[in-house]
Image (cartoon, rainbow, N blue to C red):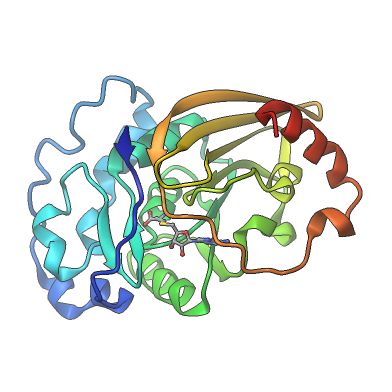
Length: 253
Ligand code: SAH
């Protein structure tokens, strides 16, 4: 079991990660970074992990641990994911510099920055405007051209669809059909699925000619994907019914 997300809640505000104190600190422990991960072989992914300054996404009180291969609390109940899981999920998307990618669960913006190191076409959805604003400011300050919005990521971001890759960094009890609908033909969705923190599986879902297939990646722990929108997209869009049916068949529920 790998601890990938998890509840933060150390009381620190998200803004702390961008404090002057944090900016002024030297990078620590980056020699030998990333650590050797036998199953991460995509050079672009390894180069992205090596290039992104993780300490700029971590609050001052956790600077010493910025280059530990572990998740960390970033305040307001948010976490920055474990680098190995970021690498694994990014690798599963098989991105090229022309890929269009949507991330659900912006958090610190670290995963967005890793994606943006591979392709300039990255969109990310956070739950709250405050969180989206903080992540946007941080990402743009570091030169990553990621577009960030706030809303219920279960609905995706239809305005910029379709996406070659969609990455969900919070765990859902069921795969949101709107996300599958927003994939290109040949598109890939990486998502942790599970009812509780202790029972989550990271899946790769591939869409080919309208047909879905899933591939097991590993067991994980992420914070929950919260339902903030009350409307049901399935009821509004009958085209999602087929996707819903296929997902039920794939996941047996
Ligand atoms: N990718 C982040 C880690 C994300 S932690 C990083 O690299 O730092 C999971 C995030 O998902 C949290 O910030 C949480 O607020 C967000 N989240 C939960 N439910 C969501 C939803 N329905 N839509 C968008 N984001 C959501």
